[in-house]
Amino acid sequence: MNKKSLKIAAAIAAPVMALGLASCSGGGGGEDGGIDVNRVRVVLGSSSTTADTYQNAHAFTENVGEALDVDMKADAIGANQAFQALDKAKDDGSTIMFFHDMAYLSVKYGSQPEKFALDNWTAGPVVSTNPGAAFLAAHDAPYDDMVEAAEWLADNGSEELTFAVEAGGTSELSLDAFYIWVADEYGQDVAERIKVFATGSDEEKNQALWAGNVDIVYGSIGGNEQYTGDDVEAKVREKFLGITASERVEGYDIPTFAEMGIAVDGEPFTFDKEFFTLLPKEIDEGFASALDEATAEAVESDAYVEELTANNFLTNYVPMDESTEYIEAKRDRLESLIDQAPDFNDLAS
Image 1 (tube, rainbow, N blue to C red):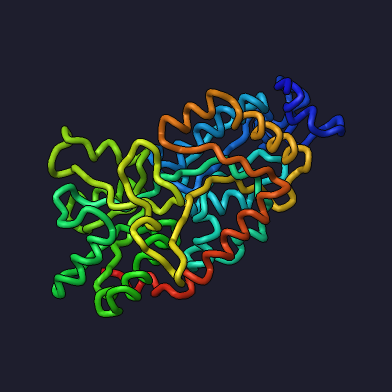
Image 2 (cartoon, rainbow, N blue to C red):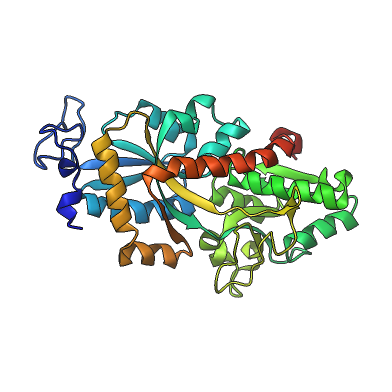
C-alpha cells in the first residue's frame, strides 16, 4: 500500500482535519496551544527506556510513524502519568497510549481507578508479544527453576522467598499464579512465606536483587539476558527460573510454567504478555482507521520484524475491529485467578 494513502489527511474526507495533516507545513502548532500537526505523542505505561515496553514501543513508533508519514515519538512517563495524559487528550490522535496487559490488570488490582478501565477508552490494535517474560534469581541461588524454588521453600521452614514485584502489573499476576499453585501443592503455611518487595521498573527490580533485598525478580529474556552470561560479574549475574508464555522461546533452555506443572484451577498457567495501543474514547474515526491501516502495513515490514526479533519479541497484529473483544476476553479469563490471590499488601515483606 502506498504510504501517501496512509496519511491521516487521506484517511478522512473532510477538508479540515483534527490532526491537520492535510498541510504538512501549516496547522495548529504554535503559541496558541494548538497541536503540532506532524507529531503524535505516544505515552508509555512504563518509565523505563531500557525494558520491554519501550523496546516494543520504539519499533511501533518508528515503523508505524513512517507508514503514517508523521513524527511519532515514545514518551516513557509511567502508568499513572500516561493514563492521566490519555484522559486529558484531544480526540484528534495527537496523544495515544502504548502499554501491555497491565493496562487492565492495574484496574482490576485496584492500583488504578475505575475511570481508567478499558470501557473508557478505544482499544487500538494489538501489535506485539513478549514471550520471554520471566522470573530470575541470582546465579548462585539454591534452585534452578520455579518448582525447585517452591521445594526449597517447603524444605526450609524458617526461610522466605521474596519477589520484586510491581503492584497491579504482569509481575503480580504471574506471582499470584505461583502463590496459588504453591498453596495447593505444598500447603498454605509454605505459601505464606512468599513475600513481595514493591518495585517499579525492571532496573529497580534488578537493583533490589543485586542489593540482596529480594530472592527472585520478574524480568524478561530481552531485558535480563545481558546479566546471565558466564562473563558477567558475580554480584550481578542472574539465571532464568521460568517463563509464563505458552511456548518456549527458541534458542533458550528456559522452561515454561506449564512445562513445570504450575497450574491454577487444574489448568496449566500460561500468560503471554501482549502490547497494544489505547486511544481516547471518542477518537476521530479517520485517525483510528489510518492508524490501524498503518499498523497492518508496518508489522509486515522487515524493519519492524527485525527490531522485535533482535529483542526476542514477536509481531502479533490484532486489528481494531477485533482488539476490544480480544483484550477483554483475556482479561475475563484472568479474573478468577486474581480473585483467588492474596492482597498485595498482605504479602509485603
